[in-house]
Image (cartoon, rainbow, N blue to C red; front, side, top):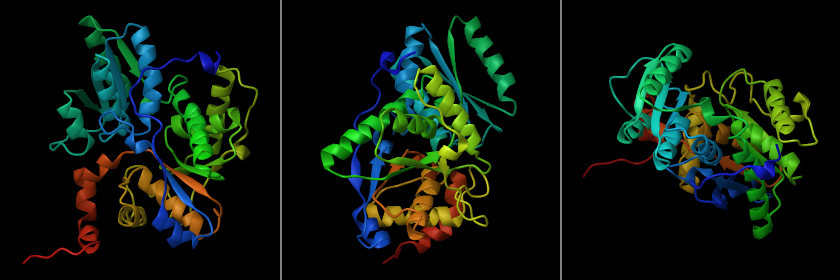
Amino acid sequence: MKLEKMEKIHLGEYPTPLEKMEHLSKKHTGGKFNLYIKRDDATGPAFGGNKTRKLEYVMKEALDGGYTAMLTYGGPQTNHGRTTVAAAIKCGMKPILVLGGKKPEYLSGNLTLDAMMGTDIVFTTDMEKAAKEVIAKYEAQGDKVYNLPVGGSTLTGVVGYIMAVKEIMDQCEAMDIHPKHLVATVGSLGTFGGLNVGIRYFHAPFDVIGVPVSPGTKKETVSEFVNKVAEFYEMDFRVTPEDINIQYGPDDAPYSGEEYNKPDPLTRAAMFELAREEGIISDPTYTGKTFRGLLDMVDKGIIAEDTIFLHTGGAMAVWTKEHLDDMQQELFGNCTISEI
């Protein structure tokens, strides 16, 4: 299939802003080069994020296929799930989430929004088994259920971030800026994989540097995904693991933290710095880790030229009870709070 034949529906507002981070550029580069931020946290719907670009293509496919319900998966605080729910509602489809873990006693963060939107939510320790049961239940009621994998990282959804590269290139030309790097999160691969395809397909003048959100992320997995996408869309390039740039951080303090959804104080420090210096909110699971990686690479000289940080959204995770509880002491120490 040719990329140009792919169609989508309208869910987000584009182009998303591309802004210079004035204060952080001065603070961390001494004015020698500039740091920019691509605001994919500002797409919509339901606060948006990087999943919206993918869902525009996925939902088009679902509507064309006559699906009436959209089912997807994730952890309890999945950003992908929340955005998929909102997209399904806009398209007149029933939203269903199958989430890993036990049913919580208290709803916070993304779960609050999922509940507000009337989502059917199933908690389970066996997603595959639960999904089969849920799909069978809805189809017995007459629905046709679209089964969307974690993160929307499909051959359809990945087109969103292939095309995002062209959007960034057009913005850079209009702004007369010439970044050499784009720093992005490495998660379920739809975003980072799509960007790696896009820079080659559109011959972008910048490379893509990935920061993983989970320990054990391998370049081989990314290169396999990129090649699968390139083959499917009849592109004339292939990559090796050596072509994939992932920065893991120090061995004793990796950018990913200890676990996927367990950020460390270094992540929170980077989040607070972005908020204090630029008034932009990141999250403790994805963008906070990636932003920490960006600043560390700049401070160590790994990055020494104009660079764009891709903000993929997810700030709702700040308001999850477990993260709020974990950062209370640091929050009180991060500002002046008094009573008169």
